[in-house]
Image (cartoon, rainbow, N blue to C red; front, top):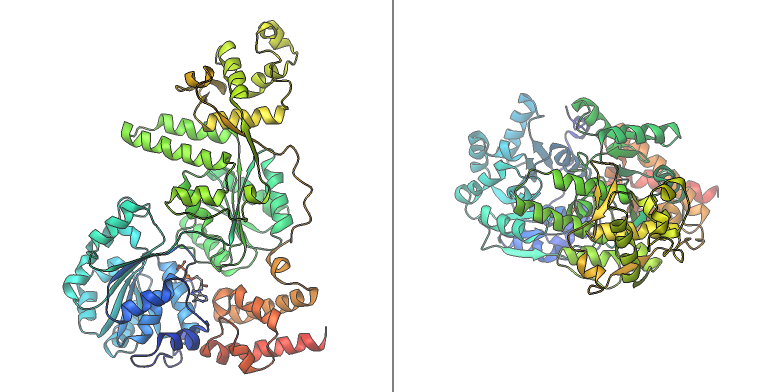
Length: 623
Ligand code: ADP
């Protein structure tokens, strides 16, 4: 089964690449339609063209693909791209063919005839790029075929799959050293968005790339706005977020359990917001169909467990919302990283509450893992909770965690609405004493009532209205006390008895706090958010100033959808949103103007230039 209809592309135009020694800048402009390289792209490309090996670490959306696609079109011969995911391969091949590049994929979805045709093309030197799954590459027959071909380079995509430390370990990747043995002299470029030290060392070692050059980019994703909000009414909070900021846009909502995924997807659909579920318990065919729809359509919400996301290259995912806590900050960064690959403004939105902390702590306590692993997991949980409760710039906390840094970003909730922090040692002591004096068995609601000096039958019956802590916390509001409970739990000072009735008990390190030896800094959540000026309802409202430009964008989008559907490709493969937005802003009136729009290369100008020029001219005539 093929995701896209490649037959429509059969007999694609002659390759746009010059036979050899083409200039990278010229290829970038002519084929891809981009005016300039980004970040390390140019350095990587020059290194590979001159025959060097290397490892490229670049964040998602940073532009890794160009690092091997441009050299593939500049060096003579066939570039072989090793990629673990068939859907990704097909996406890339479809995109390259639209650019007039001769690209193909060799994987298990390809039939005998097609595979034979491909072999011929390889032997006759008629392909620029060939994407192969690692297991297919390692077959003796494939290696033999490649031996007979002239090769320009090997690109090893998602190179972290080689590492057992990573989250996507693929044993076949370990055997890729065969490339060095069998094809000495062919440059090898490994690429990944996974940055941590052990994985990086593993990649270099396992792929025998120690002599190659390392290109490390900063891991910041400046176009993503991070926001973490205390969970009060999760569905309403999600709904408000979607309605206010993401009308008609695509995004992912992550939930912890399969049941919740299904419930939320059904609820959103019921309210008229197209949504699909995705989790490992669904039939494989349903999963594949839902994923294909998410990629192909605009404005669909995918409600999913963490089973969803690997290899989703969709550039216009405008938001990632977490209704439950992710597993760790690594997981959070990876999941939120699926938003805004096109570099346009996007949101990472997370709701988090006391129950999440309790659930995560319980999972950790029940884990059968050895103590050393548990200690590591506890540290990871503390980092995650620390991120949720921070008063610092969230981006700084995230980048710090990955060994990177930045100034205050101005694009996260704590920068946009600074949170006050204060010496909360006294409040911490009040709460810890209340827990201790009441016997370490009551839940947050009861304890807050005691601190606020409320009267109810239970408090009176148990005589807790006679305790010294009774009513000592009246100066603080109930919502703030609940926030303090969460913050102390995040610090590990309070634990939750999840087996029983959610009673709170003291963590192992409370003594210095009770004795006043360890000061506790707490955040004061704003009681009421500042009345916000109405935020733009979606991306087009953010980036396009006038109603007329937005209307033009919509008509270009409709045209794009029609052109995409006749070819069986996702709309973004025709042109991405960035390109359409530029068209709506600049309103090109001639082919020359059109060729100046980023993302309009020679092939796309030939294919679509006239149609889009006509749509723009029509809009100008009938404002
Ligand atoms: P990655 O694989 O690192 O996640 P991609 O290679 O998919 O990133 O690139 C992300 C987006 O950025 C794509 O839409 C791509 O076309 C665009 N892009 C990459 N390099 C450039 C560039 N030099 N100029 C403009 N856009 C670029």
